[in-house]
Length: 127
Image (cartoon, rainbow, N blue to C red; front, side):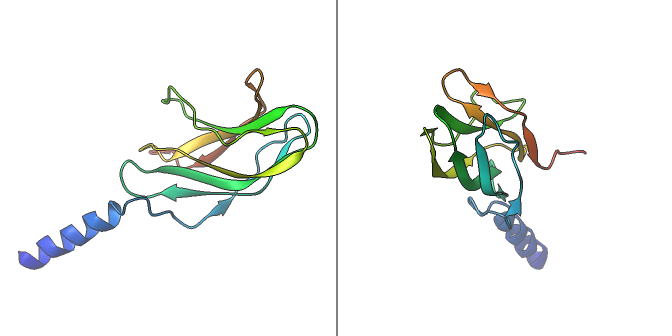
């Protein structure tokens, strides 16, 4: 009984590992208005509530302000990256806090929330 309890507690503590990320996986968001993301990767954030983290570089090649949005069917507010205005490159970092562990990622123009096609990252539960 004591051994079973210890194994169970060890399993729960591994699952609840606060904010521990999984191995990073590459992904490629669709370019939008000449703006792209390079060296993009995503990983799971383990624990509760869990989530998805993205990193990379946002490369803007024309006038205007752009950011990367992470969207999920159940979120009222979509997490987003820092904004780059005008030509240049910024480090990309955004993350969710969600038990669903997936997101749709797209590049958006900041002035009017004009977003390009999204790419799916993560794992849909039950699929």
